[in-house]
Image 1 (cartoon, rainbow, N blue to C red):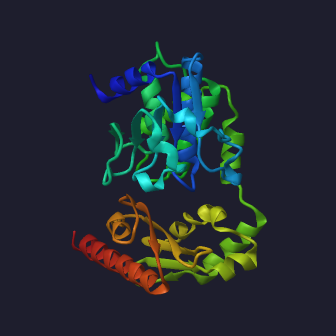
Image 2 (cartoon, helix red, strand yellow):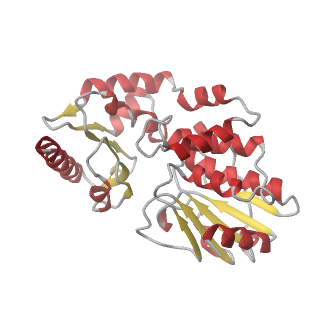
Length: 321
């Protein structure tokens, strides 16, 4: 029995299924979580299906979370999507169920769960969920609500199909999803639009970005800077791709100071592998898209120096070829 059959057979045996995803969710986290929930509701209307975790206001147009009591976890199946390591699961009750399934596309550096399905070649966890459902057309039903969510997750994690993780298979899955009855153009607008405050902060980013001779870039956003623009950390995700639009930028870090004082670090790259840097600073992720944390500005400086080094090595190796 392969892993997909094992997951499906396990789902069939449980009356109550609770689906989690990671903290500070992005469209793929919400899309894979709520998309799977919609598929299971349509396929098994007699089952209780819940999606839980903290609510993020700017993604409520995708899905809202369920508020359930602790005792619902007794004898329940718990599925966690798009979450590489257990400490990042939103809602700490994820481990109170009878069985735990992990479905993810990040490197499996910190395994958890009774059943683990990880596919690092997938563009997104939403692609995996869609692939899972399409693999069992006689047993799993993909409706328009699920298709909308999964399409949103794929669009989000591929940067609208611009990132290297986008494959012909990704496009095939997205093509099947877009055939369902939802307004893909409106959804894309919702995913792309930003507030005027974030737009003005984008101007600040471009004015203050630092780029070295090898294309290593950084932007530091302090608490005071965010406050002056009326933006909080949850709204800064839209800034992450912006440095990549600059032709001389090869890899970059955006350092966002949190209310507690430490810095949340978003790392992106056009070539140099940066997830090993993230792992050294309480983070991880994909080779070209990762996250980390810096306790102080000194640690933030250390991370930037590491970005500079991988860019230097990558550039020199590329020139030798």
